[in-house]
Length: 274
Ligand code: NAI
Ligand code: 15L
Image 1 (tube, rainbow, N blue to C red):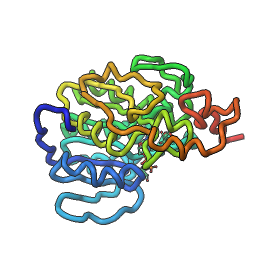
Image 2 (tube, rainbow, N blue to C red):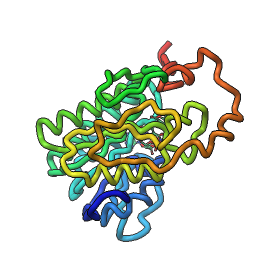
Image 3 (cartoon, protein in one colour):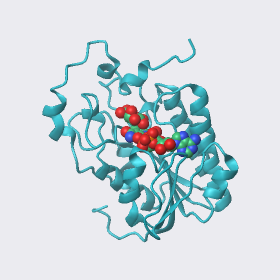
């Protein structure tokens, strides 16, 4: 958060769901400056608290009562828990759809005023890679997973309009240590840029419900963040430094969705019941 004019006062207690996951393990460390205490939660086991700045509280997001207890005493939520890839609808329903409802209901009951929602590029995955889209582009979910993130964004919008709970929904591209394939040269979001974007999303006043695309300063741009300009997010990293390594991989076949659609392989995942 280098270009803000004031240093934000950290939250007292920040809840991080999905804390045992790929991003959660990173954010457990990098979100530290944003809160006195980070409450770490997941259905999976994780390392015990390493000091008074951490609390570990296991929880299944599909358990309403457990999520309500989880949110007690919390000032802001970074909601990163849930199924993170395409799976049968029933799995997505429990973790992502029921889960996000439980998070917002608990936020309402406990007076929590700010949520960061880990949304995904798969909300708009059926847009072609030749398009550049902003936050107002029609959603074109590419999977049950993408649908659940679209539902989460609508939940965020509703809870702002109805109850004044503010959310930044980050449509994360591909956040990994480095881009893993040619498609990710456009979608990659470094951990440093993600951490900065979460900070801005937590501390920028009056965000209402803001949708922002999460990508680093990559050469090929599919997403236009002018509608989230108030966050002041200017990514610092770029996938260009990995280009030679990634382009050593074989090229995609001409009909590969990874070459055609923004959501890549998710556009051809499933069906699961046949
Ligand atoms: P991950 O799969 O490594 O982590 C998700 C965590 O959620 C896991 O630790 C899992 O145990 C937990 N979880 C699943 N079901 C749960 C339940 N019922 N109750 C409680 N916890 C549950 O995924 P990753 O990559 O760390 O992503 C974190 C979040 O960011 C996810 O919501 C994902 O959809 C979103 N995201 C990630 C992207 C990426 O490139 N890493 C891209 C777009 C979105
Ligand atoms: C996501 O939403 C997934 O959570 C992540 O694992 C990647 O597949 C990413 O999108 C992507 O599109 O690369």
